[in-house]
Length: 269
Image (cartoon, rainbow, N blue to C red; front, side, top):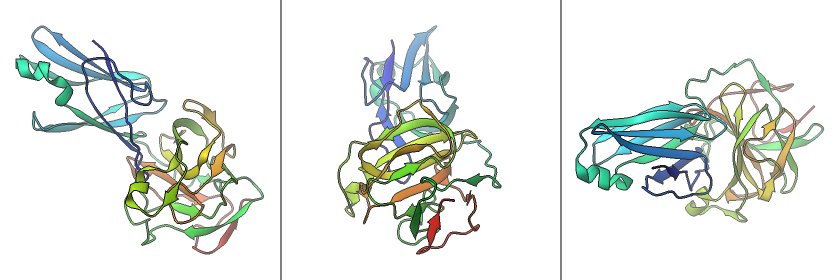
């Protein structure tokens, strides 16, 4: 029997999804993560297939079995994640309650070239002010956002890919923004798996403001959407970061100083 799982909630700070195993086929948002339980020769096997166009780092937990472990699954690959000899009958009957999955996009073993120079994440000729830089105490004070950048791109203005890659996740259904904690999970965003296995995160986009779809390849400088003010946001802006294993990493921009300073205007030459 095959059953499908996928995440129904991606957090803004770190691009995560959660799901419970079910015995019957069901869909949650998409068809990108499928799980296959199998009972063979008195042993229980559980395989997970990753249909995202990007490697994922899968975290499997089970309170009932008192276990937690991680598995890396390459794009379009299936991997055995659990097996048990002579499983008790209640485990088989209640398998939908046994395991919980969280996953993070990107290759956890990706090696970033720190000398690579990114494009600014908006079209050439445009200049916008940096309203929040790296290690800011406001919201860039967690591992997920420590090296993020907030550019004051007005709502509706174009944003562009800072580096080439494959679109892995798109959210564009939200209409509002604010500083309530509930808004943390209501930001529109585009996630791109870059060519080196790292993840680029473009957040707070306009309602229906994405120009790309999951699985689509994008090139550096390509316009991918419109800036907005959705999710946990005080004003229209673009939040941009590059991540490995859910942690932001320091990057450099082409034709810019190594460090970008809050309040300064940065033109994409």
